[in-house]
Length: 505
Image 1 (cartoon, helix red, strand yellow):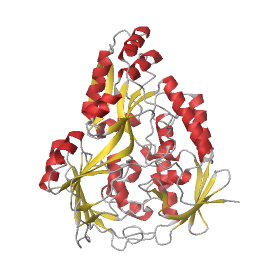
Image 2 (cartoon, rainbow, N blue to C red):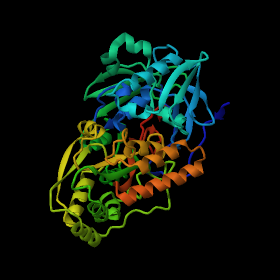
Image 3 (cartoon, rainbow, N blue to C red):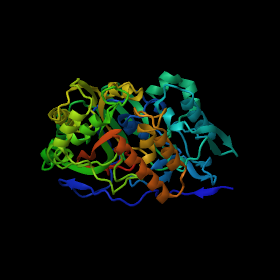
Image 4 (tube, rainbow, N blue to C red):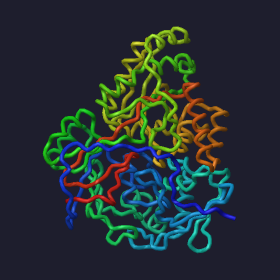
């Protein structure tokens, strides 16, 4: 006996206001051969979706590939390659029925065998960062001609959302062109196909005409890596690029009155936080960790440094995602208490490393410097270890950061589950705290099918995190996008740069 699962909202309505600065202009039909050029801080390092789960990579890959399900901009779940799905009452068995019209960009149909092969490839590859998403799979099989059945080791009430994280790959194309060829010019089922990729220069995508869901209005999509913020802004003003993600707060003010340019700012699902390796002998002292938390002036960072494009965070989850607890309050800045806790701790003035992957977050370098300054005022010596995000990410994934680190995190499924499994869960998570109590609560919320009850369990998790000072949430980030006034495109809280519905007038 199965219960039918439809695409439904799993979390309370939390509106995210969108502020548009500058003249948007009147809309008109998109031109026949329209093109959008997008500037990101870094290039992708592979086009194999099983090997890249970074935000920069997903911004590109989600235009090329499709998953069984998808998360819409408002957080609702939608059918993609799977047209429907059902779960057993205990949420252990999930059966997805594929859309018979789904095709890869080479015209071949997406078959259950492609889905099974994709998931098994990831499960069997210890180097795949996406493997952590699939730890609960006991078995996966093609059944009844056009269906795929997952049997899980433990109940998972939101497996339909988890399925949105896995891009389905073409088994035949991968076996034909090999791993290296697929990583450079893959075959996917998304609205755009790869035409040309010159590493660290440009990646050109072309709309898939007659796409099985909807043919994009934009016919050509180009991603260009532009590392320097000033260069990205200059390229937007000159018309060399049409969309810049993400603008620093200083550029937002500078661009708002520029002709032919508009700026859109939206509260994101991303939280900037200070992580702590609690296995480090110095940071194993909870009083020192609490001192670090009280030493940071979140209000000043948001109002002054970010110029209002951020809000103090009370938990690792933003208001736009399911599981956010509005009753929690951000830690108030208390420098006197921070100094006192440092004195009461076992801290002897040792220099503590703070790791940061730059080039990913607007004004990230300045925020990190501010945090170091606050900690210094409290009597904590910090040494910055900063490197390009693409180099920093593998170190974070392998849990090899020595002490403190600053990172921003937003669950792409718009649900607390991904944050919990990634940042808190023992074993598979990227955090530095193993807690049977935390693991028990994570498993409990994972199996809970009643949204209200599940929210309560997640609220208990946030409290446990704060009581043990596992990490220090800093602020909810606002995403600001600069774009040509000719571009009609709506950003999303999760930051994904999806252009299937974009137009150019």
